[in-house]
Length: 335
Image (tube, rainbow, N blue to C red; front, side):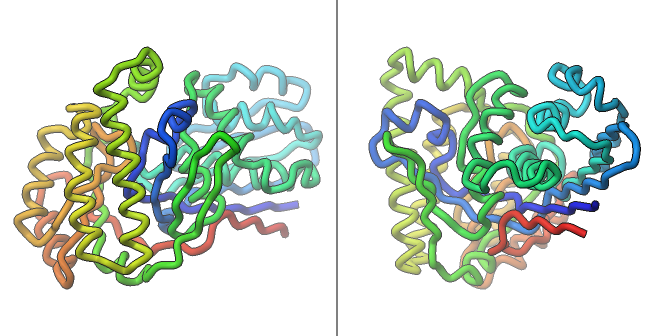
């Protein structure tokens, strides 16, 4: 049996970090806004006639073998740790090759690891006979990733990977709800440049330290998150109303909130790239993910995306990423 899966990465526009439990419980109406892009994470599983388990990451250039009778060792295997822990969780009873590949640059801040997580869960769940219904994939992904990074992880990235499209993810005491945003995706794509800065993300924002400070009662941090919550709420409304001028105003207003959350969210190189983009027709910058490197999304004036891309392409180390907004989420094919 051959199983092939894919899932889209995402560009987060507003509300990031507030999706980490329990932070969203302290801010009524907490939400995030993001859209999925076709820089895919892929997983391919092919069953074998022996008891060997081969795990390989093409983009990382890492591979190793083990066997069914040594599966327990995958619980604490440091090589390809996410893949190892997922295999240990599902405990397949047949030998197989599991090969993964991610199209997003390493450390891009586009939710590559969370997306790969969903793609692998889709494949492994099919390998073990659809043990879990798809509504269980996101809780499994979050819990296993927490085992890997050893701190709570945010939830928004799994929703874009599993469902695709543009969405607002709402967080409340009674659970998490995904709202698909019925918006003009072509206009959104025509106005957003996604730039890889050439600097892999280096945890510019330490989410665990922020979480601890928040729980300890840091009032300034609480107020920052209130602003992050409000920006996400306003952006959702502006997108649904196709008010593209207002979208630019909200994103411009939101950037200082992210900078207050951590001054290291941008590097000097990123600041230079932001200035180049703003001089060339960009209205606002949104650092993707935790910052400190990785990608920046630029919201551009109408008709100025090409000029912004041209200006950024000339900058050392910078790479404008070609993408399409993906309306499709997790795809599982069996051959």
